Picture 1: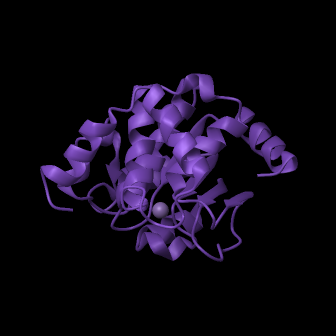
Picture 2: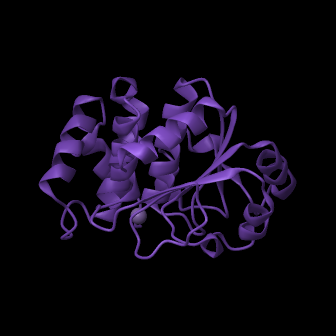
Length: 212
Ligand SMILES: [Mn+2]
């Protein structure tokens, strides 16, 4: 993000009480981790935050802290509709077009809230007030770390955020094997471990106890 975008974001957040954060349909570790990590950070800034997923997600991700706060649109359509009608700001994470949310897209198109897009996929659609797009990033979770950094909030990293973002980066990089894994990715990971992410246990929880 450039300094102008950071300023727009800070102003948008200053004028916002209700925030909804949305991941893509069939959410994976990066969608869940990035949305929950961002939500935890924004809640510490005294915002009212709701995380919505278009549908359910796999059992091997359900141990992640704060997954019980996620609202499943398929099961709670009216609840999600209400949240979106009260929202001033909607963050869309880990996807590049609203139709990646399935049926939820129609509700997103109806909201009057401004959108903030954070994503690492190619060619994002142009629907957001701020589009934070970087195809060189390993994961949206790595981008959420940098988003928190841009907002001057790294002092608010806690064990939960560290764990959530670690899961997202780990799963989207195939445990740090894929080419998008950079030295910068490892610096972020190092900081997440320092902030309390139980790295070895996270690998066990995702890969050893259940098959993804
Ligand atoms: Mn991703």
